[in-house]
Length: 233
Image 1: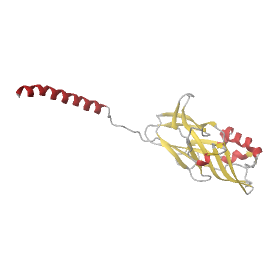
Image 2 (image 1 turned 60 degrees about the vertical axis):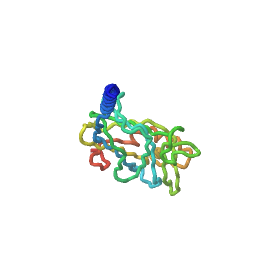
Image 3 (image 1 turned 30 degrees about the vertical axis):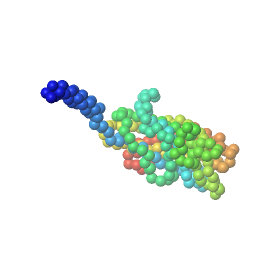
Image 4 (image 1 turned 120 degrees about the vertical axis):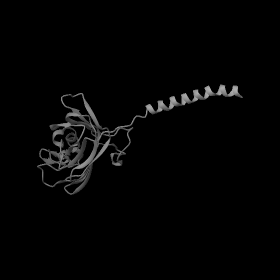
């Protein structure tokens, strides 16, 4: 009996030592996870904001599919920080207060531009809103309203990269929060030579789509808006 006990003690010690090594190894991989508070809030608003005031065009619903929202580090065209990848449906409430899009943390630094893409869904992407895909294809912008009292639904399949400069560079610190607002002016999409185009007329489609794609400085504006009133600080 004594011989058997002596032989088993080293085995018990070996098992205890190995168990302890496993426990210590497991603990070393479970460092506390630290998170940083959001230092940037991204909001948006919509407005008529056009000199064309005939009342011929009335927009009720504007939806834009955005993707790859980034902030560009000042004086470095190749250095951008991801804010939101998307796709994200921006439901534009016209002439309403500023609406919340998202919040997050970006590294301390100075940023001079916002980059994003107006994005037509690819075939392999899930549809975040059923109106962005139908038997006719997939879309990036959907606008509903009326022209001369006749209802219309306008769907654009255009994709476009947008780069918007802040009027004043944005500095983000690790503490505190800065609010920025994206202002969208969709009525301008439907103006040519100072007058509204009929969205239901297919002969106007190329002009409207080009307005959505190309008139960046007129259609979209980005600015620091810490008091959330839709006006640059």
